[in-house]
Length: 140
Image (cartoon, rainbow, N blue to C red):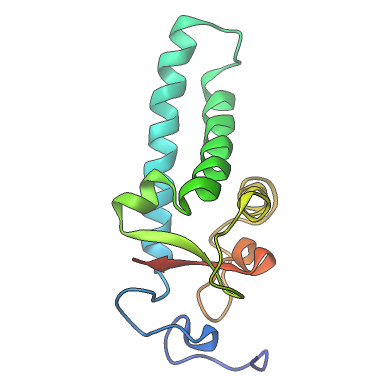
């Protein structure tokens, strides 16, 4: 591993990732734009849903719940959300060449949505939610 005060020469270096291109660490800005795209998709769906019924709560609550559901389901089934897909990114496990899986996708999304904002990153540029689930967001 690496020392706590060590600084990598590029994001993902300490994880053994390439500096650029496919398989490299996705930038924080690119990941933030992907979250914004996902949020706007959920907002559009929630806005339509609340015009049809109030049984699902208000628009803000429904947007948030849809964002959480989309993060878990898309992370589990596709290893990427629609925003990540549009920007050429995906979620990968750091410890193995296996799929992210349901539980990692669920914990990762719940940590992001409730506890650890995705803007909190380590020296490698990896979010704390990714660090907790041993995942990272890579460029495809």
